[in-house]
Image (cartoon, rainbow, N blue to C red):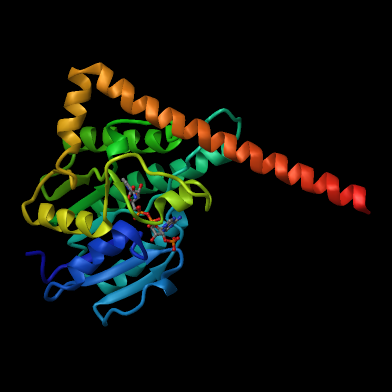
Length: 275
Ligand SMILES: NC(=O)c1ccc[n+]([C@@H]2O[C@H](COP(=O)([O-])OP(=O)(O)OC[C@H]3O[C@@H](n4cnc5c(N)ncnc54)[C@H](OP(=O)(O)O)[C@@H]3O)[C@@H](O)[C@H]2O)c1
C-alpha cells in the first residue's frame, strides 16, 4: 500500500494523472501536490490534495513547483512526471517552435526535474515515476514527434539508472492508447481513432499504483502490449499490417484537414464575392 507519503502528481487534472491521483488520495495519510496549468479544474478532493498551477514546459514552471513542494513537504517521497501532450499529424513542415514546444513539455521538463528531485532528496530516499508510453517503444505514423519525445525519455531513464545513487529509484510506465483528453489534444478537437488496443485511465492508474507498491522499474498496464511487440518483431507481416492500418488512418486524417482548409478558402472566396 502506498500510504503516508508526500507526493507530487503532474498532469493531475485529467486522464492518467487524475486516475493515479484518485488511487493515491484514497489511501491513508497521503498528501498530494496536484499540478497542471489549470489547477482550478482539480476539485472534489479533501485537504490532502493541494492543487497548483504552473507550466511544466518551462524552467520557471518546474522551479515554481519545487518551491511550492518544499513549502509543503519536508521531503517528496514520490514524484510522478506525468504531464505531457501529443501531436497527431503528417510531419512535413519546417517549424522550429512547434518542434521545440512538444520536446519542452514531454522531454526537457522531465529531464530537468530529475536533477531537481535528486538535489531535493539530498541522499534521502525517493521514487521518480515517468509516464513514458508504448509509443516510446514502438513509434507509429502520425506520431513522429510525439514518439521522438518518448523515445528520448526511454533513453534517458536507461542511462541515468546506472548513474543515479541508490536513494533515488526510477519507475517508468508504458500505457497503450488510453481514453483521455489525449486524442482530442492530438487532433486539435477533430475526431481521431486511437491505435488499437485501447484501455481506460482507471485501469492505468490502478496498474501504476500496484506497480509502485511492488517497486517495479517498468510498468506495462496493458498485458498484451509486450507479447504483441515481440510477435510483431518475430513475424514482420503482422507489424506491416498494423502499420498499414495506421498509415491509412493518417492518410484519411490529412485528407480531412485538406478538405477543411479548402472549405475555409471557398468560404472566404464566397464571402468576398458577395460583398
Ligand atoms: N492517453 C494515451 O493514449 C497515452 C498513452 C501513453 C502515454 N500517455 C502519456 O500519459 C501522460 C498523461 O496523458 P493523458 O492521456 O492523461 O492526457 P490528458 O488527459 O490530456 O492529461 C494531460 C495532463 O497534463 C496537463 N498538462 C498539459 N500541458 C501541461 C503543461 N504545459 N504544464 C503542466 N501541465 C500540463 C493537463 O492539464 P492542463 O491542460 O490544465 O495543463 C492534464 O492534466 C502524458 O505524458 C502522455 O504522453 C498517454
